Structures are given as C-alpha cells and as structure tokens.
Length: 379
Ligand SMILES: *Cc1c(COP(=O)(O)O)cnc(C)c1O
Image (cartoon, rainbow, N blue to C red; front, side, top):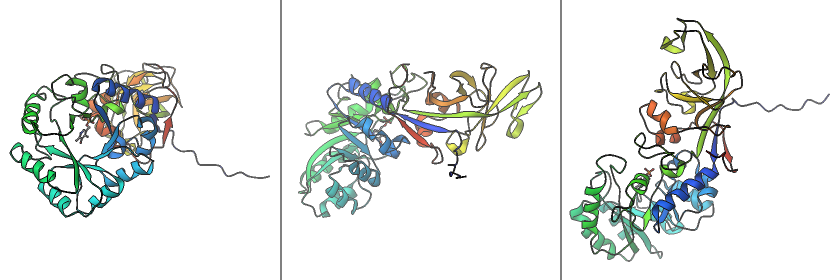
C-alpha cells in the first residue's frame, strides 16, 4: 500500500490580514484628509501585518512612508513606482545611493544629512522633506535653525524639491497640537513647498485645525484599524475595522471546583465551580504576558475573559458565558470572529498597559499568517 507523506499540522493558532478592512480604513483616512494626499505608513513591516501582504489592499494610497531602507526596496520590488518616503531620512552617506537609484524621497532632520547630500554624486535630483522639531524633541531642526537649513538645501544641485514636515507629540491627547502647529506655521511662513504634519490622531481628531491637512497626511495605525486615542475613543467611533485577527482554538478543558487555581503562580483561584478553556496562544506568539485575569477574549464569538497568567504557549479562559464551547472552539484573541463579532486589539493592549501598535508589531514569527481577500462580515 502506498503511504502518502502526511504534512505536519501546525498548532491551530493563525493570524489573518483582512484586505477589505485595509481598503476601508485607507478610504476612511482619505475621507478625513479631504483633498490632501495620503501616505500609507508601512514602517515596521506594515505594523506587523507584512508589507507584501498589505500591498495590494493599500496600493490606492498616494505613497508609502517607512523608515527602513530594506523595506523601501521591498516596496519597489512589488512594482510600486509612486512616492516612497523615508521618515527618518538616511542613516549614513551611502544610503543616498539607494535613494538615487530607487527614487526615494527622504526626510532631512539634521546638519549631517545635509553634509552627506552636498557630497553625494548623483544625476538624480532628490526630493527631501525638511523636518522641524516643533516640540517632540526627537528628530528635526530647532525653529531657530530651520530657515538656514532650508537655504542650505535650496543651494544644493542634488536637491530638486524641498517639502516641509513636523510630527506631533500629543495629537491623541489632552495637550493637543495647537502649540506645535503654531511653531510650524511660524517657522515655515513664506517658505514654498508641500507640507505634511498629520499622523492618524491628527488626521482623525484635528484635521479642521488650520494647517493640519497640509498636502500630505501620514496615517499609520488608523490604516490597520487601531484607534490612535484609545480609550478616549475606540475604533468603532472612528469607523475603523480591524485589519489583523489573531485566532486560535480551545485545545483543553478543565472543570474547576471552588478553591482550584489556574496556571503559573496560581494567580487565579475559582470561587465557584467553573469550566476553563485552554487556548493555543501564549507570549511566544506575541500575546502580551502582562494581560491578566479579566482581559477580554472571544470564544465562539462570545465575549469572555482570560483567567490566570499568560504562559509561553497557552492562555486559559473562562467558559462560563459559553457553556456550549468545547475542544476546537474558535478563540479570537483580537480582531474579528467568524460570527462577525469584533474584539479591538486596543482593548487587549489596554489590559496589558500598552497600545495596539505594540501588539500588532509584536506578532511572533511562529504564527502562520493568511490573507483574507473577501470582504469581512458586516460589523
Ligand atoms: C509612525 C509615524 C507616523 C504614523 O503614526 P500613526 O500614529 O501610526 O498614525 C506618521 N509620521 C511619522 C513621522 C511617523 O514616524
């Protein structure tokens, strides 16, 4: 008898990237942006979703913004001929050769980057985004040296076009953007060139403030369906849909009696008889270990909670609200369940004291990822 090789079955955990959600969210950002052009920010491997996996869904953007030169090469390798912006500019002089070869636009945030440009031999005129430090105090020229930097760039034959940018520290919070916007307007007054200031939070929350729309907006998290200002507003409020689902299955069941504990450190102790589902997902999959008892999770689309500690390969969940659940039941760690029910990644992140960005970016390499091209169930 012929024995066919049997492919090893992976663990039941899987991430799904939803193209329809990416398209919807990009459209949502575009609606907010009005007539400004939209960079889809795809740094950090498209916030953990995978540049190659999101590309088709996001090619309706006007450009792609990122900061790793290898990622810029990957965007060009996908056949994208439109704008690509290096948000942090080049890191060393030879990076400029790649900018010339691949026609990458690049931020210029310090004097050294201008020195390198001045020494760069190229036939290709570069488009640069001169960056103002308007208060974030990370990258960018101080307001007092901005104009001098602009004039230096303007005098270089290597530079074809100068655009102007800054980045907000508090677009998602109470402090807001007014002070930084005023500094930007002041520093760039009467300078020609396109402008770009708005991340997701500014695009969604402050677009009607004078100057915020600019010529380009730069949404990242919103494109992936995360609310930039959770828990003030959630993704549903901003009409964003999750672009990533992390799902697994129940692989074990335990019936606890009062006084029984679950998992390492016995941190959860049952006070009544209850059924526990053991789920194939742990911190080695990118699920945050800081999520404690009470963190929301969906089982068969029904909202319940984590109990006990997250371990490397498993979490344990309370099956009380889902008495019909059993081995193989669908567990949604974040994203969209088969039923259409949604658990925003921001809520899971909040339970771990962090933000949805970090969870998306930390999806572990061992998790198999599939792309769903079909439209998601209506929310
Ligand atoms: C990451 C980044 C963005 C996008 O930020 P979101 O909060 O994800 O929208 C925009 N601009 C710059 C300079 C960035 O580094």
